[in-house]
Amino acid sequence: MIFKYASPASFYPLAGKMAPVFAVAAVVLTAVGLYQGFVIAPTDFQQGEVYRIIFIHVPTAWMGMFIYLVMAMYAFFALAFNTRLSAMMMQSLAPTGAIMTALALWTGALWGKPTWGTYWAWDARMTSTLFLLFLYFGYMALNNAFEDRRRADKASALLVLVGVVNVPIIYFSVKWWNTLHQGATIVPGSSKMADTMLAAMSTMTFALWAYAIAISLYRVRSIILEREKNTAWVNELLDRR
Amino acid sequence: MTNPASQIEQDFAVWPGFLVILQRDLLLAWRTRAEIAQPVIFFIMVASLFPLGIGADMKLLSRVGAGVVWVCGVLATLLSLSRIFAQDHADGTLEQMALSPFPLAALAAGKLVAHWLTTGLPLSLTAPLIGLQYGMDAPTTLLLVVSLLIGTPILSMIGAIAAALTLGARGQSLLIALLVLPLYVPVIIFGAGAVEAFGASVDYSAHLALLGAGTLFGFVATPFVVAAAIRIALD
Image (cartoon, rainbow over all chains, first blue to last red; front, side, top):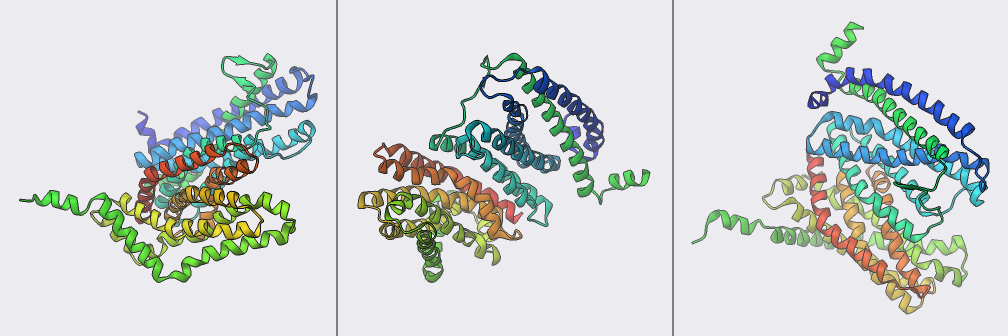
């Protein structure tokens, strides 16, 4: 059943049905999440209004890391089972992951100025997030560097796997090197946050998650069409238009 | 009475394959000595440019010396990475290696060690010269050399993966830099960190131990990754 959708030809229509659902979910959840974050959640007594940046900052940072892990999973499938669709999913996820990581850095800088008094500090999480962004750039550059698609897919899949082994090493090395960032506030089981703030942040996380799924499904449809343009089913599809 | 199959197994085992490639690459390197010297000269030149940019205050220089040496060493290593496979790829030797009965990972390990012996080792041994320029005292310089000796093999190993992945790619040398530099972060941190910890009279053995762990783990794991990358390149 699942393997049926490992073929681009059968995944294409499925992605077409799923993408709008996630797109609508993303819009609705964003509206709810921003309302919770900007209107319902109380003003922080230490940081004032500026803390509300975290409702964007934390979800984007999570998604930036999470999408890299998802890419690594697809990289494993691409190399182990030699499925073309896995490589296409990696290719469609990478720009979204890079945007999320860049947004996390950007919102972090905007939050850092009024709170820490500096846009940038060489703190562990910021530095390792920056290098995560570089890893995304490296993947995209390698994926674009070959004429031969199969070669590009496999080489970049191997790179992502090497990268995912390194992400925790980079994180802990930088953490040991320098730490200024506040410790984790959200630990499963015990949260130090007000419930309304946590609700807003979770809603925004699900909103960005839905957005990432929707946009990568739309993108993978374009990638499928582009790569399979010489196959019979794509030509039939185009003829019917 | 020798079984022919086990005879083949003996002839084409891991260690003979490793040694054959190691010997061959070292010989090739020796025949093109000038090319081997280039990263070392680059290393010294870039390190000599820093004081011109940040000022010749000896106190400042001795403080930043270890970091400058490490970053310059990383850049010099970068320059040498495309050399690992480019020639063999261009003339078809790499395909013959992949087809040979030797395990490809053993051949890759030979290439890694040969690359370190011709890049990381000379860079580490040149570092005291830069230490002199930066006014570092003898114990600090010694520790710097030790950290380079333990850490630079990791640079060769990660670099070889990137070099194999980018074989035949457009703009290979810049691409290698893009892939490799984020992965070099921990090595720079622990390498320069050991010297900095020593300067601050803090225990520095943890930094060196982690570098050593990285080198040992890398030597076990990377030959297989490099072999996989070579197979992808020849696919």
